Image 1 (spheres, rainbow over the protein chains, first blue to last red):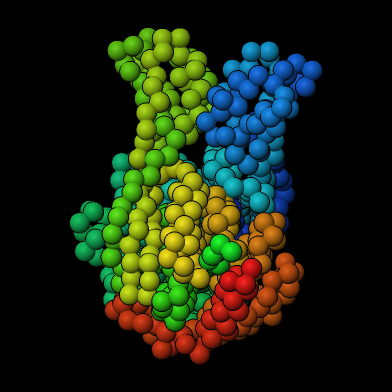
Image 2: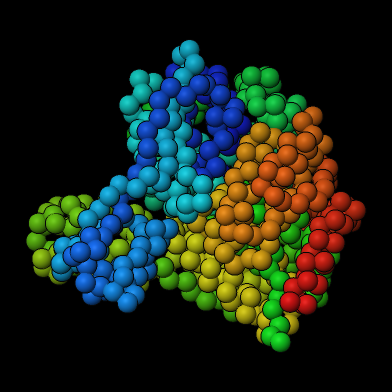
Length: 277
Length: 295
């Protein structure tokens, strides 16, 4: 479940499908704003730290030559006046500094960047990755979380993806067989849908579009979808009851029969139709 | 005394709360005294709500990425083993680089015994200088699937702030990206204050809390407005509580206005509808701008 534009209803749709279908593992792939658990509040049973490697210095070996700082392409290392300093937020954990150090003064330690949690209630299951506050890069957290999905016994996985069309989005959709883009018929929705379709272009995914609040404005995505060869697989009108359901933390399909019917139909006749690629 | 424009970022944590519509209305209300920036480089929409002409477009290069010269590659696999981002694999006995995964660290080029890997510049998008009837406009567009959105935001905001200084425009108003990671962090890094647009839903409240904590971490003063405040029976009590929690200022509420999507679709000014509701926001910007000019 992805969108390009934020706030189009990804999480409402993902939580609805996961609430309706016991065969589904719900995965929150929005590492810096994981919200799926607010609508699927299954108690967390286990958690694991998500880590990235970071260099640490042995001050007895470091002579401040600066080879590591010159090699680092992210500008994450400073060697000023013989002292060594890491700017942790800029470090990508690539390990080049350790390799270039002529005195073997650097080694790597795993540094926690987030937490992956698994929640369960009855036959329902959720997996979420959460970037620790203030850290800039959610990609390792998203990568770890979507990679953990196959450890579940569930035969199907729904990933609630982050908005946008850049690296976090690409990371979260990479393991998917099919991508449902939830959009809205406004100029913003249409522009961002086009960007998301552009990012998906060469990824070899089956893509479908769900038009949410299809009656609020007239920027229908049909023409764009036809041009891109992507089907519109569902339409949902604006509903105050759906907005209220979401505001109460209840997946809208549990309250609204049109949501229930549209989404189960879409799941069985579009999402599962192609099967795993 | 050097002239220093005051920079305010409109942010939210959660996407789709109404940042862009509110930014556009504020730009219209402050015409002549504002420079508008769309820093949502991943999904830029502000120019759709204003009438923007693009004057000068600049390419944006991220870090150079790995490119294998197949004729020099012996297929030893050293690069594949060294790459932490799974950006290289062996295909038909030769290393092959996946540009979408490459972070540009250069480990592969360092370990390759044949020196068969070059690091080549990659265009990651554009940024541009333009204008709208209300004043100068700066925007950017990351290549779909692109990297370094934070760097592009930083570059965009530096250019925009310089432009505002040169033209002696007192306010830089920045339409920010959703989320609280790299592009949002970079947006805060180029702002003097944040205006947070929140929505009274469980997810909206959670994301406001996270955004507010980020502002506190960066010591950026934050003001909060609740949007579509009457669409849910929850009310704004929880949004107010969270705002207090991170030391922000609660400015007020905007009700759900069903005509807004249509007005935006027709590029009409949403100000007539929003006007009375955004008056506290305009007061907030005015008083902050005044303080900035005195400083």
